[in-house]
Length: 234
Image (tube, rainbow, N blue to C red; front, side, top):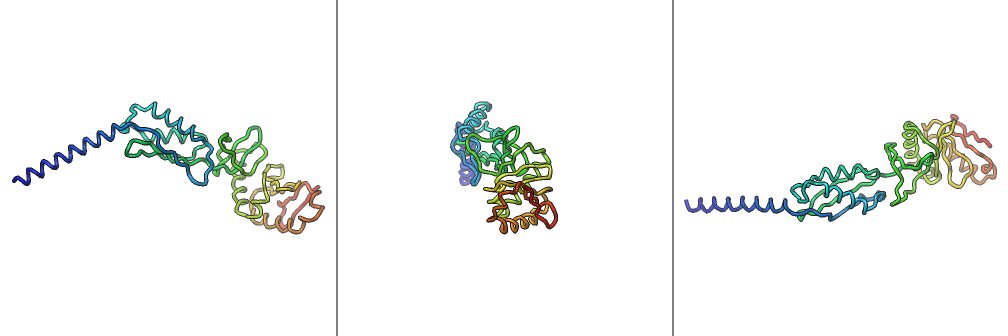
């Protein structure tokens, strides 16, 4: 009987202690502790900007304590930023807030009526003063459909070691999509951006044969849109 009473008292003490610790933990004041960045992504948004956004969220919270903190509000605020692809937040046991930020990854830089980046989904977002990313350039004002075709062409170009290093810019001509090769004065006309593997193979064979020729410098366009042919124009 005495053992049962002692056990009951211990249970009550443990439950009371647990409730007390839970309440005390919930009353810890929150503070910014850590901002971590995804690897292999540019820091398009400055850390100071992230700090300011987090401080705004905390100041707008109903409570400055851990128990009243809404992590979803923090994530939603950061995810609304033009340069953030994804943000995850977490709380340390001492009340510190940590966030993991994944910046957007530019695929191409547009230089037209305005300058901006495009991501892998074809979605435009502004250039960053915090970091400039070296990516291919597109000259002009692509439509939404052209942006998707452009992204597909750039990604396939990146899969070819020679073409990835050889091509530095893109442009949409009346004949179709054109590429600007490094250290050459002509444009490579793809036409409709399909069957790119075959077109690249055809161009590489042409370039290997002609790269040391002075005639190559006289061309303005090297057209790959014709089946089985490379048509050059001056």
